[in-house]
Amino acid sequence: MSAKSLKDFPSIKTDSESLEDYKHDMVYEGAPEAIHMARDWQDTSEILEFCDSHQTPVTFCGSQTAMTGSSVADSGLVVALANKNKILDIGKDSQTSEPFVITEPGVILGDLKRKVLEEGYQYPPDPTSYNEAQVGATVATNATGEETFRFGPTRWYVKELEILRANGKAETITRKGPPPSEPVKNSAGYFLGGEPIDDIIGSEGTLALITKLKLKLLPDDSPGRFLLILPFDDFASCLDGVLFITSQNELNPRALELIGPGAGEYFRECESCPGALKKSSLFLYIRDDYKDDVDKMNKLETWFQNLERLYQSLGQTHQMNDLFLAETPQQLSDIRECRHHIPLRVNETYFPYTKLGGGKVGTDWWVPLNHMKSMMLETYEEASRSGLPFLTFAHIGNGHPHWNFLTKTPEEKKIAQALVEKQYHKAVKHGGGVAGEHGIGKIKRHLIGIQHNQETIDQMKALKNKWDPHHILGQGNILKS
Ligand SMILES: Cc1cc2nc3c(=O)[nH]c(=O)nc-3n(C[C@H](O)[C@H](O)[C@H](O)COP(=O)(O)OP(=O)(O)OC[C@H]3O[C@@H](n4cnc5c(N)ncnc54)[C@H](O)[C@@H]3O)c2cc1C
Image (tube, rainbow, N blue to C red; front, side, top):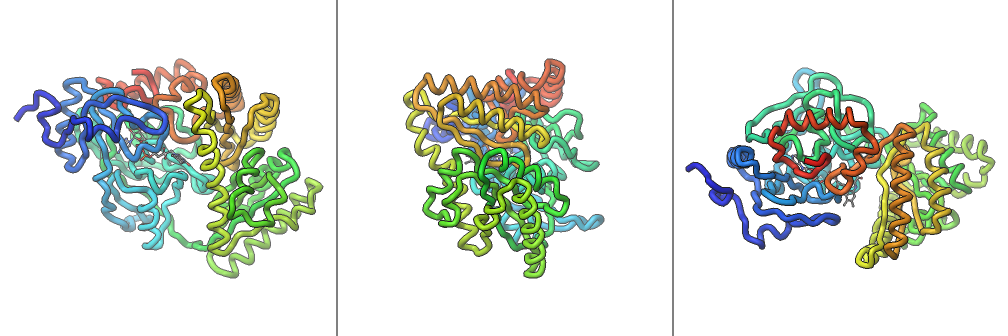
């Protein structure tokens, strides 16, 4: 049978009930006309071929957590991957002995992480949303997380992708050399100048459909974990703490996170917050690992010696008595809860104001570490002058903190948006970028021009033309189609 319309494919549904779940994510409303739950790649391939020849837009959809509108279709067909959720193989390369996992794209990242751990391996990429996000989508957004500090972005772990091109043609793309090491934080458009596999990673469903992934694993040879929560007297010292820790070769934490001005209050108000941490409201949050008890003792000794030197240099030796070591499962889970309490409480409190024209205005910029302190202090000064409530927290070890401005009225929101726009320009001037995670999608497309000049944008357009000449994939994501 040769299909005349999408409805001729039995696996495509167009009734409003089937479409309901795919009309929006948390930030963007779309208008998809049809949905195909992928089950058989041959079927999906024929559907893509049909769409390409009829110039029907196609949007790929994972768990819709990107919060950029990237998985939401303005029109045309949605291809949902949730049913392609099998882990196919965990093994070791016969030549290099490097461990790998082969998986379908719809597997939930957290499930994959737990499964490989059972086999003695770790898959490091850890966006906070790992229990919701699909692994194919984390590659399509080049996801990062707390432990990107030590382990880098998703890009570093992608060895091979099987894809369907826009015209439905299947292809396998294998990485030939080592992955590009820089930039660690970059989800502002296409990666230029890499191997073909780098085109697809972070391309937000605009160049091809990822149908199978071969991902690099690491041995899980240090299964123990501890957290150090370091209090500081003032913001500048806290940032000096980041620079100190990152400059010490013998310190190599898995994560180095900020609980900065405004965020500390939310952290402390959480019921699980240990009493010892209620005195301060500015912290660095460090996660490290160990192989066994001896390794743990050695690592803690190294940490304490270095922290003593840090606090001495800051004239804050009293903080040695107040720093908190979380090492039992209960303590680790309490601190995790306090950390998650920050965005949860902020969203809960300020989401109702979105209906009144206010709400949370957040940032996703990043800067190289040598520009981090000046960028943070300038931003802090401007934020304080604005009179708006604000907080800053998250991936400071990668120069990628989140700033949230909390607004109740349209007027306040406008002030916050102007402030944030200024910050994006400044971050780029400092050698950084406008999007450290989540991608650009539809709602942050205006930021591309802040980071990239016309020549780079033209190169990105050429890349899009090469992979998807009829511009059917992920319409409206990254670049204006
Ligand atoms: C509470 C919360 C915390 C978060 N924390 C982080 C974080 O720490 N770090 C981070 O990086 N992100 C974070 N995110 C953003 C988000 O979870 C990630 O971008 C994640 O990778 C998206 O996964 P998803 O399955 O929801 O994909 P979706 O949102 O459904 O899709 C994202 C993009 O991937 C494309 N896509 C999906 N599947 C495929 C496929 N098989 N082939 C080609 N393209 C495909 C879609 O078209 C879309 O462009 C967070 C989100 C939330 C809600």
